View (cartoon, rainbow, N blue to C red):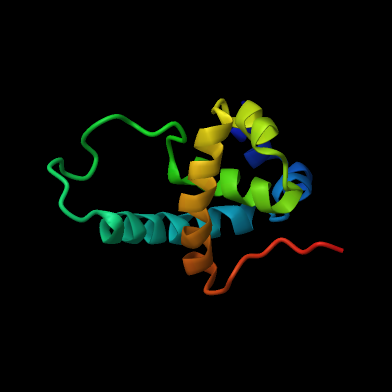
Length: 117
């Protein structure tokens, strides 16, 4: 599992791992959290349970979700490696990428693509 506390204390390490400074990450996290809630509400059609009920997610906080997707886009690890870093199975990594990538795009106001050189 990634040591989030250490990452948030070391600006150089944060830039190396996800491409943003700690301050930029914290600013983006607030907006990402709001966009994540909007996307979740929009995708919930006729659910019996209310928001927040049921099993808790495997990536607990919005900051963890943001770190997950930013690391994926910066380093482009395999699903197996991303799963090892975040304590998930590779199939759950695939699901989370499909959920979080549109949220990040909504947050940034642009499309996020991986470029092959």
